[in-house]
Image 1: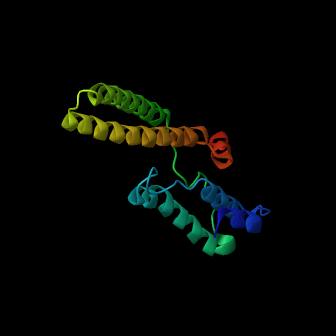
Image 2: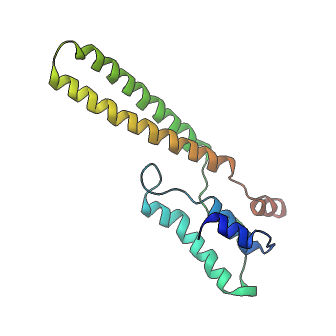
Length: 154
């Protein structure tokens, strides 16, 4: 079921369990290329969401979570992934400059090594930027209305 279909079908509900499920579905992290690994997805996202689905199956006896069921992020990963991206990008640029200098010399072996590392570091830069942006997104959405209400009450 797509996110749009979930929102269309359950969007008008005021049930806290349904709202938590919609929020989790809207913030599901991407998996695979450029996203998180399947193991991390299962550990950080699917395990809490499956617990939420178990609470939904209980019906009226189900308890709404007092904190969100999708992963959080602090400011450290944002800074760390940003620094990694800058380092990988600078290294890719350095390899590109070396590759252009070697291009005229006709040294195929050195040029191919520089080209390989340039492509590898460009890919690492893209993944680092995507991860930094996702960490920033999780950092900016770290408190749900449930968590803010729980912190005020506690």
